Length: 242
Image 1 (tube, rainbow, N blue to C red):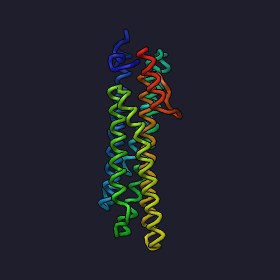
Image 2: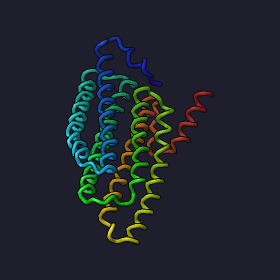
Image 3: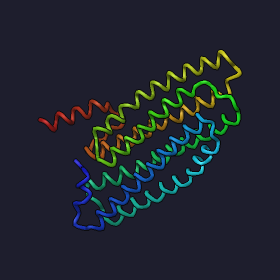
Image 4: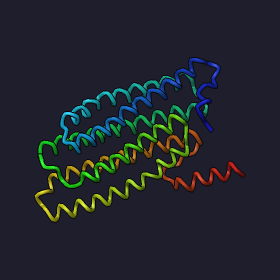
């Protein structure tokens, strides 16, 4: 099992510093992405096209951070030839930045919808769902990053499991909005923009779950992707107690 102390166990102080640096860069990128999600949802609900444009402009910075962190990971792999736990850390960071970049892409899509809707004027149905699901996925991103910062596999597990709740609420909102469009065809264009924004939020939840699963892999050494999360973690807990 890996924990925060594992980062400072190397004979080389420089290697310790390099590992801590890439982890810090990941968390800094995560903080920016989390703000991007929050601002995109706020821009849509408040019809704030200026804020939405700011979200779109940050996307280039997010993309550059992904490239920089990836290059750092490759440099460490080439120079240090890390052992198992360090290798898991570097792999987890390298994969997590991909998910963070894609969360940024989805936030940018929401910002684009916010600009379209602010120009259209009248607020369509579905903003309650946007606010609610938006807050849920923002919290998922925040807690996935917290789990990474603290090497907290239990928190990561709760984030990964919560994605099912977001999926359920997304499908429920979708059914309601489709029914509304059928009843009022004049609303179709505006409500479709809300549906696409909700779709982006659902995908952000998926990416937060991916990061949480990488934290579990990092801490426990267990790949829980495409498996029953709770079952795998419970089995591992039983093994450790036996």
